[in-house]
Length: 194
Image (cartoon, rainbow, N blue to C red; front, top):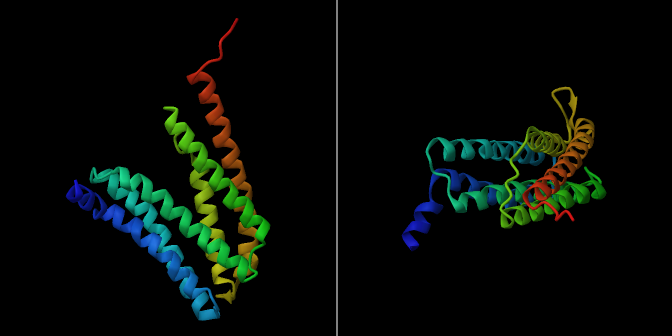
């Protein structure tokens, strides 16, 4: 039993998820008092680690190494990384706290709804909207981490525009998820008609 867990834990997709989890404290350290150099390093680490999300999913599917632990670790790593970066950006006054509160609230609400769906035997698949949400959040956070004017681009201004886009898509995808859940709930357990 213990060796099965070890084998499941130490497959490559799960190791990549663990790397994403480990990157969160590193981001915190880099963003405690960042200047230009540490901001750039934090942005590149954040972006590189976010790209491992696609890679671990691809490897798990193509190698047939999808595991229960991986299904738990992957979304946990994603949310931990995004939320950590957003909270650190609040402390640096690069993003408003109310925006972060809305984004994090959506993530918690959808995670809770997913748990309810699984317990009810309802499958709600990912959509292009969820993927767009993730990409828009990563793009906004990367720009806000870069923050400074680099290569002729004002990354703080770009990040401010992108975080608005990410906020809209995040809320839209959350509403879409709830609507699809309640539609499936009604068709899964239709109400008694008298």
